[in-house]
Image (tube, rainbow, N blue to C red; front, top):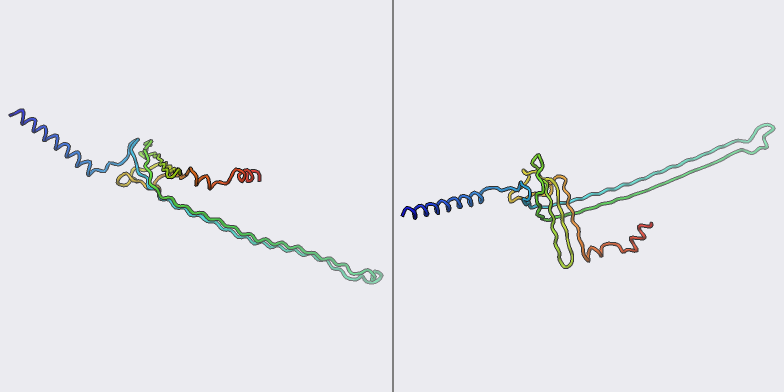
Length: 188
């Protein structure tokens, strides 16, 4: 009976230890802080820029020279006169604007832990739909205190962030100018 009691006691201790480990992992916050840990990057980027310029320039010049009839013996010489003018006018206007939005979710891996504790991350996501490939890449430096619950980090909290979104496929090819057009633009 003693052997059976020890076996039951060992089994009970193992169950209690396993239960404590599950309760600990259920309520603990296991943030990604080591190399090869995974973060979820919430990319929410919006950019809007605009520029407008107006220029007006006017320039006007006049030149004049007048004389009068001579007197005395030179009275027969007619009056001298000259006139001149110059005018220039310029009116220039220009403007440009650009707007872009990107909302995506990408998993990134910690590839290095810096001496100050900051984390270097890098990740990419490739999605292919109907022979169209979309590629999202993200990299940068993250402070551990900026990592949210469930290891989520927002793109606005990434230092030296490099976020690229590109595509390959029929739609991307159709958006590019043809070879002849590109050659003519290169020449001129």
